[in-house]
Image (cartoon, rainbow, N blue to C red; front, side, top):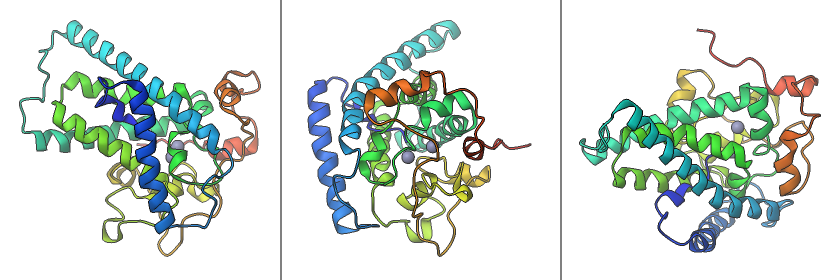
Length: 286
Ligand SMILES: [Zn+2]
Ligand SMILES: [Zn+2]
């Protein structure tokens, strides 16, 4: 879910470079992959593609804002707790930090993502990400600005407080950017024997499935360990990825209308049967 976080690595680079060069690079890689290994035959410029380009551009600005919020929170917490400015983990070997970072980030992302499906007020923002009825690489960036800020901060504030070194952070942020686009891509890929280890496009396509059997499943961004642990993993053997994507709730067209939608009065707590189906009580009972 968490898109285009390569801005962490390129914070010193001009934003315009990040926006245009980054978009061109991702488009080249993932359009090529979708042309070579398509899951479904569909038009490259599907309905709503230009709205998602708007999300990409604004997401780069929002990403810098959430970085600033996360860094400020980190400084505040470290000051309040009297923590060492070098962090708690930076003395460890970088390969070990990277493994710890992936596991920690997956756990934090899992918790936030699951909460975004569980709690009505968070779902009002997160459901924008689920509104596309077709899947391709660009769906990755269709994220409401507040959903992005909350998701980024819930992940990066703890990560920054722990003080990981630059190299593991760089490697992780590149992985985060690529795997986010890859897992939304219209390609057929499930990693074969590792299908229950690494989150694949097949795994994440089920998360976007519009059928009740797949509601509130497959929350993790990189590894499947926490979905297996908390029994939210769903990838039926022998079944191709779902035919129907999206949600059974009306979502307005256009970036501005979608951004304002969660603040409109009619988005009161779930009362329609469709909404109730999407948000069952999913937290572990023990
Ligand atoms: Zn997604
Ligand atoms: Zn989701």
